[in-house]
Length: 334
View (cartoon, rainbow, N blue to C red):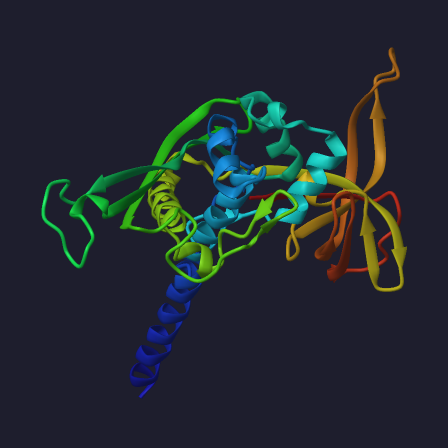
């Protein structure tokens, strides 16, 4: 009987040991976060004259196309795209001009301020039309009193071409270049005709995402070019490395159950990140120079970020207690 009881007990112990030693599937298969990018408004200086003639006013074609591109990238899901208002805020604070944004070194600086892995910038190289008129006939004969040479036929063709560059924010290096081209052609229709009565421009901005615009000839060509550019940028995603950032800061205040840190999104903290809180217990100084050689510390606990702005974060305790202003916080985040 003892032998009968011993075998199941041994088997259970081995099974328990195997469970402890083998990582769970969720730990092994934890997904790596998506590359985080920001898309700057594309330069449209090359097509400025043609686009202004088409719309009858100066429309920011670069912004309109980027709005379409961002929508496409978000829907596709390979990249995590920084929201527009965060980008605009940084650009306003740093007073970057349009010419500055086209410079890779400036783009890299913007990327660091936003905490992204890469910047996508680009330009529109073609945004216009080609219209040809042909006469039917031109000779004798007539039909109900009209000469055939009096009939005309108009063929309109819209062409859109875009190029984009992915910039490494640490080196300013151009990691990849992608292009997109689109074309649409119809008969007897203007560039802004062909689908609905689109008038979605004003104040220098055009709503290229509207269905009315995308049914026009120039809208069809624009959508095709942006779709191709989106596909080509996604194909270059493996060239964008996910940056690992070491975030260090201090507890600025403790208010009830909230721990407020002096570091935020610009340092790389995101909602959900966990940070270890440590308290310096002793400083070891060089007896000759007085310089601090080493700081001895103890772990106070762990906190999780629940609300993050550019320069601060509000956290709640995960473990530990008695957090105090001046305690050090640290995490390694992606």
